[in-house]
Amino acid sequence: MENQFFLLSVGAGIMVSVAIFVAFKAGRISGQMENHALDLERLKQKIESLLWKLLEEIPGNAQLPEVNHFIETTIFPGESMEQQILALNAFYQSLLNHGIYSSYFLEFLNYLN
Image (cartoon, rainbow, N blue to C red):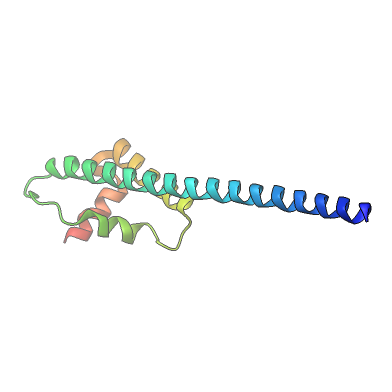
């Protein structure tokens, strides 16, 4: 009888430990997904702002259309969040480094026409 009680206590302890571990991991994953979503939005806003600045350097382009649609079509929605962040970061860095001569900016100009 004592053996059964001991095994039952150990089994319950292990189950509680596993449940706490799973809950902790789920919380961490949820937090990471929120951070990635914020990173994506922040990068999109930076790109939109930079596209505005670059578009002002080109004569005759006073209005900026919906940039999010262009960004969404450039970055494939089926990719993981990490891949989307890396792609948007490459997009942003190219705009920063090459300005109006960036391949992404030239692609954006083609999108406007």
